[in-house]
Length: 139
Image 1 (tube, rainbow, N blue to C red):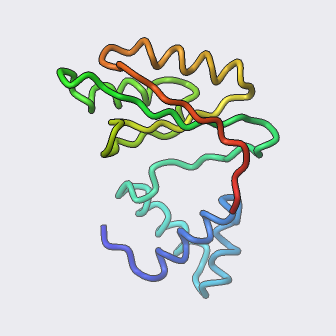
Image 2 (cartoon, rainbow, N blue to C red):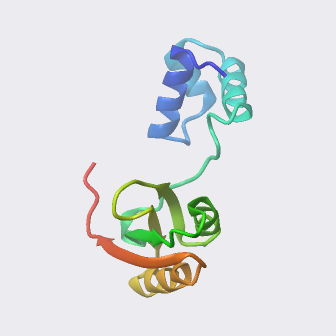
């Protein structure tokens, strides 16, 4: 699906505040609520918007970046696929460089971060990890 400038503005409004109503977005864009609703439905149907979610405040969670090396005889995409199924894993990136995969983990505590790391290390093909805890996010 081709996005136009109006779709881009709708996405921007939803990124900034996903709870903003279609009526309010419509007022800003001089569109009807039904026009905004139809555009959002088209964005969802075409997979431009994959899901609606919330981000928990940093006070409620701990985050970590885990760099993962995959055995050269193992298909990296299979490891990535298995990683996406782990509860604490929020984002999986296949990357270049010394490591093959980078994972963002979020959990309520360091103990749960450690449990998630232990779990991902058990995935066949994972041969090494390097973890950094995120201390603060600057926006």
